[in-house]
Image 1 (spheres, rainbow, N blue to C red):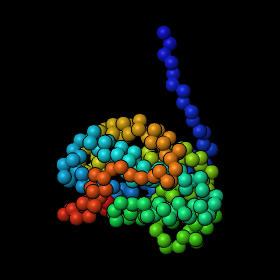
Image 2 (image 1 turned 90 degrees about the vertical axis):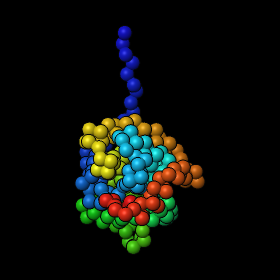
Image 3 (image 1 turned 90 degrees about the horizontal axis):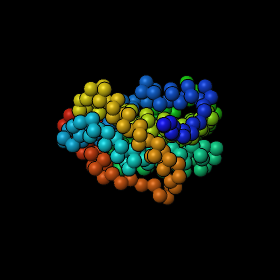
Image 4 (image 1 turned 45 degrees about the vertical axis):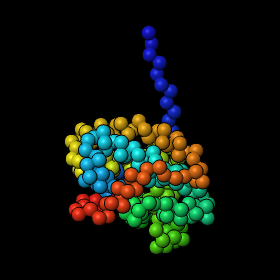
Length: 237
């Protein structure tokens, strides 16, 4: 008896677009992502996160209902508005303000500024220069700046969004491996589990209107707020 194979739809990327996407979502891209845990450090400190399964559940909440979800929807709308400066700037302003704590605001804004600075030098494009000139020293969210770069460099929305979500998950898994601590294999098992959740999150983000955007993860927000007063901290959020 033959076993039916799943139908998989793929978007082919040109070599240049693929290389840019791989570079921008690599842990080695110098935006400082390794210094942030999105409140995970608090959850480990107070005993709520102790295992690989706990880490996976925490990160899935970030992606599906917390700040990662907000970033995914804003990434979609920013990519689609990239050709309209006024529309893009309105989304960028919303994204810079859409954070529940000072530390998660720092997390997004510092990485956004670093991403724009590095990318303008290594992967220059007039659209990035124009945004930098318009925006000046105003805070900018990482998700919207990367969405702009992807659109400017002709990287299609769907693969860019999937890579954004994967990079977010991978960075938080890395934080969990260091904090719990976990073995490297446990970290990869967590990332593999999260990879099964990411497609549904991405598909939902693609059809979510800005008017419907919100979070439903109060424990994550409280963990981030409590992180500000932890006695010892390895991470900045």
